[in-house]
Length: 230
Image 1 (cartoon, rainbow, N blue to C red):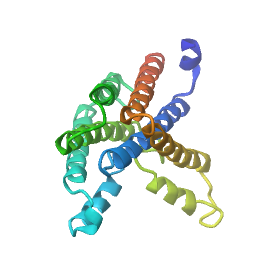
Image 2: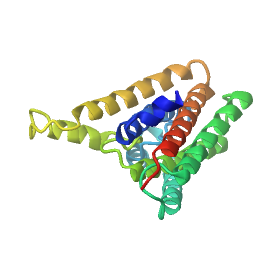
Image 3: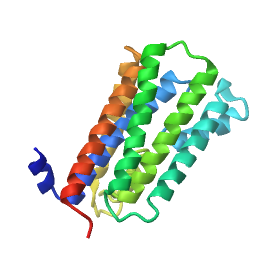
């Protein structure tokens, strides 16, 4: 299996890894919004909108949760940017370390929720969404550094824009349409999976996302070992 991984082209392999993380983000965002007081931990555009509406008292929307998740995301993204500042292009040891942090953080929260239960205080809830926001910030900055076009792993607005703009109704270029459609469908499927897993337990989706991130991290490290950056 390792030999098969080693022979896969770098760009195609990185695309597959980022698409897997896109699905994982959909799962985590569904958990955050539906199970953790309507807070997105990956889609910061959603948090900014929720925060804006909440500030004028719309429909009792939360303020502290989205605000702290946004702050956590920015801290995580800044950390990722700092660590990767002098890294070589592509997947390196630093990339593996950062994605390992994301996997461990998500797994830790999932395991804690599994044993603690779902009756959480507001303080615990916002603490969880802040930690997950930071983890998604690290993931987003790492994905940005790897640079798979149209696949940021945490949001698909720009992906949908490119899909429509380059479609036959737009410029007609059609470049990257398959990749863009796949990214949109995967975050959609991830959100559906996360919502479904909530009917079993709050921790289920987080544990699934942690496993996906861990697998992506291991595969990325193995592939990079056989495709050193020159």
